[in-house]
Structures are given as C-alpha cells and as structure tokens.
Length: 128
Image 1: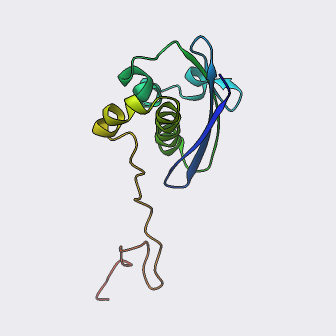
Image 2: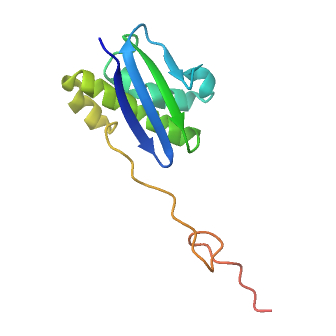
Image 3: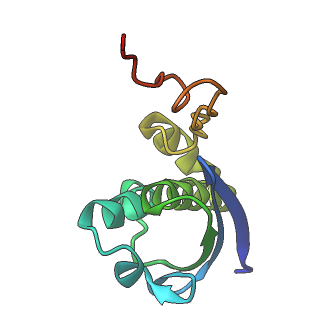
C-alpha cells in the first residue's frame, strides 16, 4: 500500500496526514500524539474516525500540523484522517459522513472593528 496524503483545516489550523499500513502508531509533528495532546478529550477527537470505522490498529499515521490552538488542530487532524480513510475505502464514506467527520467546519473568528474593543464589544461607557 502506498502512502495516502490528505489535508484538513479548522479555524487557522492546517493538518497534513500521511496514512500508511502499519500497526496503529499516530505521530503528530514527529511526537507521539498522546504526548502532543495531553488532554484525553483531544486524544479521543483525533482517534474518532479510526474508532468509527473499526480500523484502530491497521495504519501508521504521520501528521504535520501548524496554526491555531490545540483544539482546532485536533479537529483539523480528525478531518484529514477521515478524508484519508475515505480515499482508501469508499465503503466507509457513509459512516463517517453520518458522524459529521467529513464536513469542514467553516466558522472563523470575526475580525475586530475600529471604534470597538473587540469584534462586537464596545468600549466601556461612562456618563462622566
């Protein structure tokens, strides 16, 4: 089996996944993903597509991720892994789509406007 390359994005995070046959190792930026994501919740998010398709120990996955925070990165990784699994086996597409793992979440941070403290928050008002 050749290496399958896919990309996933969330907010400003970009994840590139390289899926190859192996025994279930997941590396994020050349570190074990459990070391990279200390939170159990983020580890679950990363593994969701593999658990859903019951292919936990069939592939080695190497991921390069940058931008955003840990939560955005975890969700970008989830999308890239789901896309790789679909590229490998079209049968898994309906299962992953039903769980919402193939949908790119397009929500982004609203930009700050002039005359305001944040995007919508006005400066504090005082009569005197």
